[in-house]
Figure 1 (cartoon, helix red, strand yellow):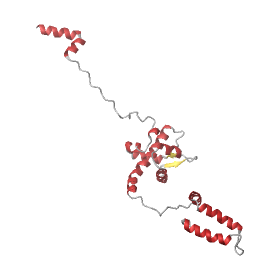
Figure 2 (tube, rainbow, N blue to C red):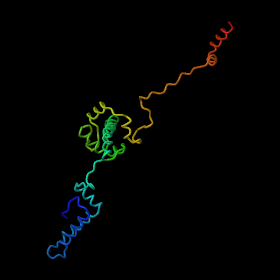
Figure 3 (cartoon, one colour):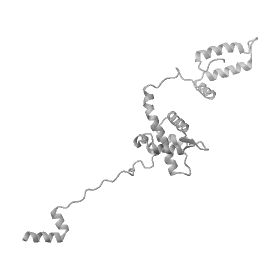
Figure 4 (cartoon, helix red, strand yellow):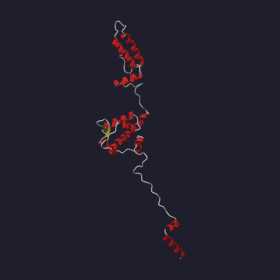
Length: 214
């Protein structure tokens, strides 16, 4: 139709009207049934928002309504959380490698199901981790931690509380289990009053009576 990918509906309608008159089979000079049918098909796709979005996706066209926008305050909030999310991904993959060394990978679907995060955020985190060679894809496109990723995590241990804030409760093996480092509370020693001690020890009771008689 000769229109730009970002053209609005009015521009598309105008182009369709002009070209339909040109290629309509009734036009003795420029009529062309094949081109007229193609034009109708193109207009049908471009005038339907869902069909147009699917067409743009196939063509690799990214149309942002109103142009790109800066996130503002949200960007600065995300800036600090990005490092924590990347650490959470490494923790999941390190733990998988530790527990399942013969099958150390997690699929993207598994990862999405274990983390409280949007797809865009996870994709961004994985892009960084792969560029750093901390994470790789195996031959089935599943995710696995590398030696470099393990070394990084060991030398830069993240905050447990921050990492756990990204992990879904149902993805934790036993969320109510106490941490191994938590020591049980020591019970106070039971002390007996004098009368109780005497009752518990007949020998002590006899000695006390002897002393009182002196």
